[in-house]
Length: 198
Image 1 (spheres, one colour):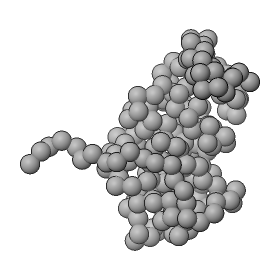
Image 2 (cartoon, rainbow, N blue to C red):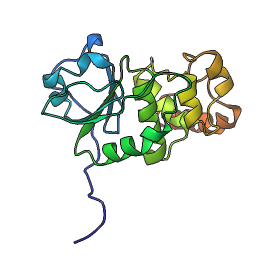
Image 3 (cartoon, one colour):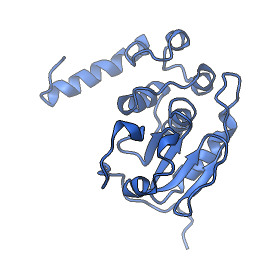
Image 4 (cartoon, helix red, strand yellow):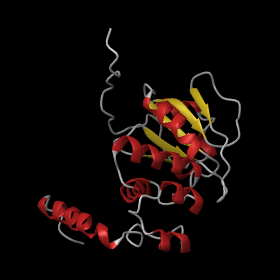
């Protein structure tokens, strides 16, 4: 018997069987098993099953769940002084062991759940904070962890001075000059694909 981890098939784009609307307040992080939401969708079992969700990370106070899903209750406080880092090992392990997609939710889907997703993208996908935040903001524009949470993830790739002043700054405003090489590479990729510069 091998001790090597089980290989799962790569994640595909999710085509939910039910139509999504703004009232669902959820965002699918393409190419990953992650779905971020506020509390609005947690009781919509049909929607979650259509999105092939098997596991749910609840970043708020524990709530009764449904037998259809496996839960990790983190009970995180959305406060600048709260140390969120002790929750990272359990959330990473929970996500990695999930057989299907994972819903990560907090009250609004802006701070706690986004921070857990950012940590997983950084630790599991090798992304910098800037890359992870750009990925999440690309599908969830309201993503805006509190400054304490962002400081706990800070790897020097995001302009924290700008973020401290404006949690809702655009991703381009948060780009450091050292990330300009990455920006040029992205623009070159768009030109090669025939997309041209905007």
